[in-house]
Length: 126
Image 1 (cartoon, rainbow, N blue to C red):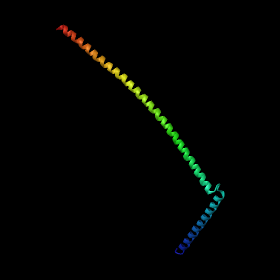
Image 2: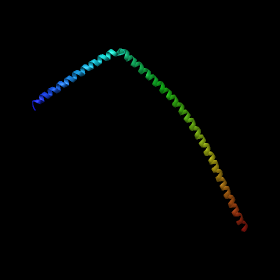
Image 3: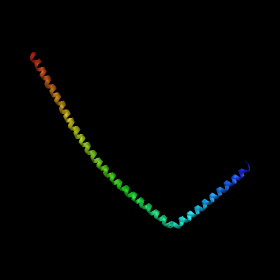
Image 4: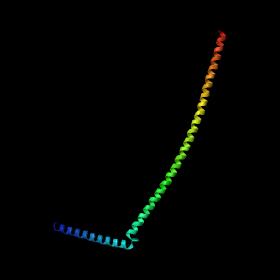
């Protein structure tokens, strides 16, 4: 067994170095192909990326401004509707209050009249 261990380590080392060599060769070939098929030089590509980024930022700002304007409109409309609803509720409550007050007054008047009727027969009997 001891004679096989050094042989096994050497085989692993050879396998690892072969894989590493193939990896480096593949990476080099890939880099060369990428350079050959690159559509633009680095400076030009970076400039295009910067332009696209600026345009995206500008479009985002415009969209944010439009959304802010719409939000302001919605807020204004909602505030106006809420104010109208509050006023309608106040008017309805006032009308109901007037009806309740009138009903209370009618009840008081009926009580007074009934009390007077009840007192009249007693006054006649005395």
